[in-house]
Length: 303
Image 1 (spheres, helix red, strand yellow):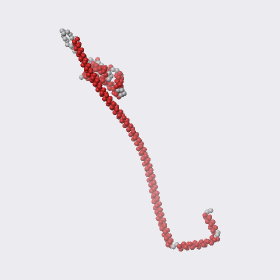
Image 2 (cartoon, rainbow, N blue to C red):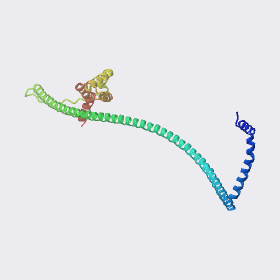
Image 3 (cartoon, one colour):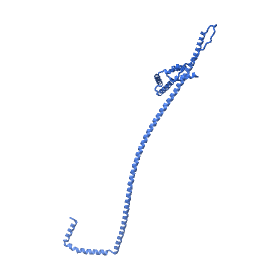
């Protein structure tokens, strides 16, 4: 049951009682007296004061409303500033992300460049090490070549000493041969002497043999087999410079050059042929020494 229905039921029950109707005039009278008491109890000053308070309250209310409007306006401005700040913050965040992305890209590029530079540096260091190794090897070869040159100079000096010694021996032998020839001529002169009564005839000197035409002499070097010469030169170089292929090649070139030069010598006299035969007999396939001795002998002969 609703409240209104309950009230209706209450008043219906109340007005159904007789005593309830008796209370109605009493209530009216009490209401009148109450109104009189209130009207007499309230003075005009109190009404003015209440009105004044009402006006003050209204003014305060108006001021409060004005302040409220200002606060609302300030709030709106604050909201607007907040939106602008949020927009700026979003823009700054976007710029920051972009800057971070750019920085990351630059770091990646720098990293790649650094790796490329490190790779180039490693290659340069490797090339430098190889160059140093080649330089050291070249220095060792140069030292070895210098030592070989020194050895060759020493050997050449020894060969020159031997040639000088041989020349001395040849001179001594020639002197002895001249002495033997003189003694032989003296002995022959004594044998050919006539008796004392006979007229002595002076001993005629034998005329010197004149040089024959160039057609009757030949170069003995041309009698050598070129194939045999080449193989012998190579074999001698290998034996002399074992495991030193550079010096073997040098030796072969020098001996071959001397051999070719000897082949081109014009042997147009007995002296030249004899000296060439003697040099070949003494030095065999060492054509450098053959050439050296032949040239020295011919220089001495021509002087």
